[in-house]
Amino acid sequence: MRLHYWVLVWAAIVGGLLIPSGVFAASKAEIDARVTEAIATFYADSPAGKKLAEQAAGILVFPKVIKAGFIAGGEYGEGSLLINGEPVAYYNTVAASVGFQLGAQVKTHIILFMNKAVLQGFTNSRGWEVGVDASVAIATLGVGEHLGTETMQEPIIGFILSTKGLMYDLSLEGSKITKIQKG
Image (tube, rainbow, N blue to C red; front, side):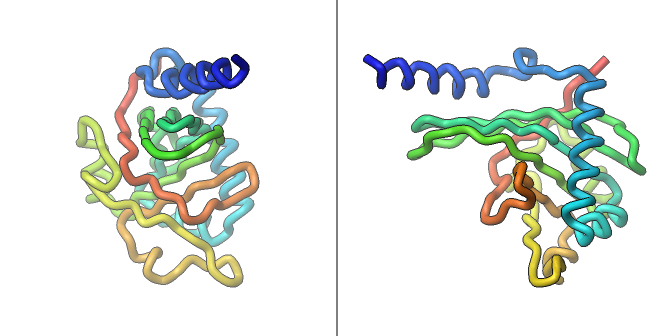
C-alpha cells in the first residue's frame, strides 16, 4: 500500500510537469528577480563564464528548471531572454524522458547566443528545440576555471548549474523552448 502511494505521488509530479505552462506560471516580476539572482550567482561562480557572457549577443536564462521522474520524467522552467542585460522576452522550457529515473532536482539553464545571426534565428522561431533547430555546446570548466577553446568558438553555449555550482555531463538535448506572454 505504501509503495503504491509513492508511485501515485511521483506520477502526479511528473504529470504536472508536462501540463502546459499556465499551471506553474510565475509572474514577470518573479521571473525577473530569479533571473537577476541566477546571473549574479553564475558570474560569481564562473569568472570565465561571465567573460563569455559579456561577449554574447543575448543570454537566455531559466533560473529554476524543475526535473522529476519515476520511470518517465519531465522538466519545466520559465525564464527570460536578456539583451544588453535587460529582459526583452519570456520563454518556457519543457522536456520529457523515459527510462529508469527516480527523484527530483532543481537546476538553472543559461544559454549564450554568441552572435546576432543565431540570436535572430532563435527569436524568429515559433518553438525552438535543442538538437533539432540548433545545437548547444555545454560548457565545462578545465583547470584554473578556464573554458575549453573549442567551446568558446561555438555559436550557442549552454551552462547547467545546480545549487552546488556548474553541473557536468548533462545535456539540453530535446528541450523545447517556446516564447510565452507575460503582462
